[in-house]
Image 1 (spheres, helix red, strand yellow):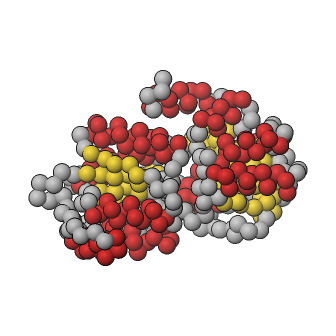
Image 2 (tube, rainbow, N blue to C red):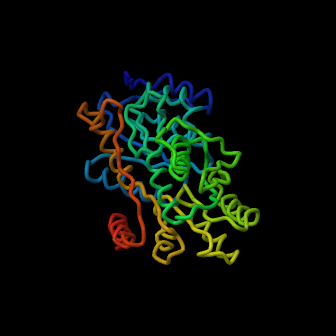
Image 3 (cartoon, rainbow, N blue to C red):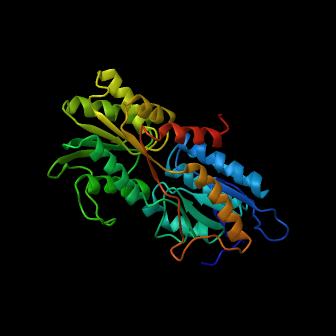
Length: 338
């Protein structure tokens, strides 16, 4: 893909849309390289990633901004447009709705270096995706479900959005592993109906659009409608702590198994306490660090480490009671919280 640094066209578009009137320059002509890391929301997960961005910027001697949209895809789009008008050298973004953002992301990719992190936009012209295979990570989470429920049972999945590529793949991986299916990342079970297997039933998938009140209400409603539910799986970082709150208020802690994703403090403490069976963790710190490292390498024409598919894999890990304290201590060290 050809990367252009002439942003006059984009500035004109922004002037029409937002009443701006500047025409930005690119990385040529002595312009100091600047990079940006754009999340898909606001969450402690992204605070960990921000620490990685800051560490990379300090180590590499570059300027890097971190932006976290609180209002969904519209705000994320506005942030990306603003970064273009400012002549940002390279952007690492976690697309909120990759399928419906492809044309826009391609426009961004024509005017700066564009990579994705955490969640991919596989049909876009991004140069690199930094993250994990979310389908395989979902299967690792499904394996934890089977550990927690060796005799089977009923399971509800809670997640922020289904529009995100990572959420869709992660959810499908959980379902396929729990039901003992073959490995097929292209499979998709519609979220509106139960999925029934020999030993397990996936009752459904509830979304909250990053609304914490809605996420907790989903957990509460699940317990009210399914008093004999066996387990709840929270696939975004904030879901498991809110599931615990709902269980505590319902007097059902330790009665309903909780299987988590990501490394929120309450999740890790829950594993120590025994109220959460386990979690699958990503490495948001490295997502942040590697994003800046790769953007700089691309800008300077150096090898960025991705294969022909543009994928830089940062493996997920299963965290249980036997390794949670070691993992948490390392995380605190990276965040300067020792």
